[in-house]
Length: 361
Image (cartoon, rainbow, N blue to C red):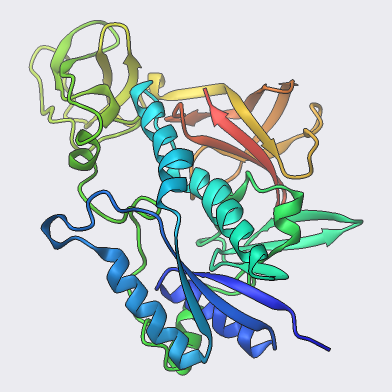
């Protein structure tokens, strides 16, 4: 009887490396696939993280004893992820590239390529779980709540989940690093990447300015007082504190509290700012979500209480879904939510089950 073939998305990090190792130990026929999806500035200033990452993948593959293939999805990434990423920023929203990258590259272009290689499954180093129940595939939170990545995977569908394995879903990060260390994997202590999906870690405003020119304008309080200048609305996100460049201001009732970005007036090119983390303008009791994606293929009930996140690492906030049609839904929270940001994703849960979600409008 032939072994099931699994193609593992390898990034050169400890998580995908241990995912491949565990599958190999479980008896799967494992092939590593390294995806290169960004080329625009890899040669500038010697910046080429993909080269080092690929060397790490090769070192891990040699240690595990598995084949590795490299594939270039730069064209797909630019068309399906990066162009949408820029379009959202131009519109004054703050997109989440990891969500798009997962649905369009890691679980679409990568999945299609893996199936063409004869794979039975694909696997990644994401912290999440898949459960099949009554013929339906469910996306579950990871055992390690501090690393759970189901938020970024909410756009996956039944066909994708049916072909996906998440070997790390039942492990804690410390266990993953220990497995890597004991196995002698050369990346066991490698720092986790925190940059833009596939683009890497770099000064974000400087990077964005290459594609979206600066359009300076005023920073105003909700009452209309000008308190500073911004470099361009695209460079700021709701709830942002760092990088505003506003200090204490006499005559505005300055209580010495920090300033936060609280809204964008696109017509006037004005960034609305408020003082204090608890300022009421920063809180919202409801939101509208568009571009909906439900994992089961069906929208949730409108008369149940769910939990929802409006950003990664947030605790689930009790909510109800008051209206759902094919394009949009309304979500109402039991308690006002801080810095609800257009362009980010709201993801809905029923206990440990991720139901899906949409993009905040």
